[in-house]
Length: 374
Image (tube, rainbow, N blue to C red):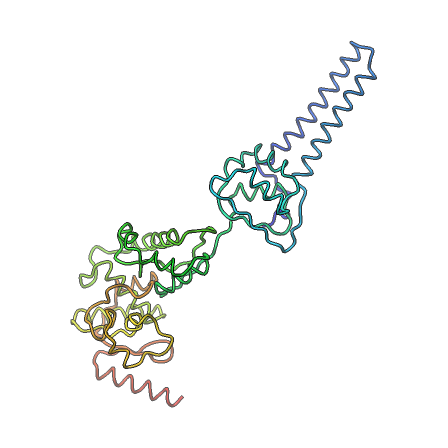
């Protein structure tokens, strides 16, 4: 809601100004009473009236000026003026910057009002953007409510570590190599008790204060992962997998399907393969091991020897291959009971699941034939 829209509402911190006006009116009454006493005690009524009238004019002018300066609005139009408050900055320097930037017209009013309201002692560091109409009142309200700029950062489910780094670099105005160095820092991993940052930067929409450091953003994303998953871990994990292995499995499920109804079935395929000591043959792990691909996966890619090639190596990959969402993690924890060992994309957004290799090859041929007819 804009400042203009709530002019009719009286906030608690505006009462000191009304108290000031009330005090002035009380003084006027007391002065009138004093005049009547002085008239009785002295015959120089004319001189007394002149002094009193002069004093009242000065007081009234001062209060009028203070009220005008406090509520007077400066229109910045569409221009956005950023004011950055560093930790430990003095209010005097902030008021001066506001005056120079043209956000307010009276530095003195800003300082006096801020001191009166105690805002000058409670400045929250951050970047504050000002646009449209602004007054000392609205500026101090923004400071009091710590209404600083927050950057919206959305990390989608299935984003890889380097994709998350690119998103953070773009949104938080950091160098991407700097962010990558943070997510590969072994000291930070040890401090947070993680085997890898891959899989633990929870996909979510975040609102980071302007100027947030890359390491602080990463730490918040890890904290979000823990807060979202701490309550879902059962006492016994499927086929004796560790928690980290569940996250690795969940990342493969995340990469394989976007359909919630299929996640538990895809999970069953891979847990069945693990139980049978079969290679996982998961295309997304191959793609990840090649650093990501902007083209279809070729047969020759399946022969490239990387730690993540589950066509060549048994078991789960050494780390997760993306940031799995909560649905995929839950699917990895509670796969459906099936006999499926294979699946293939049906070119309709889903998959066909098979129990044997013969069924799997038949399903592939039927899908290819249907695609050719289309």
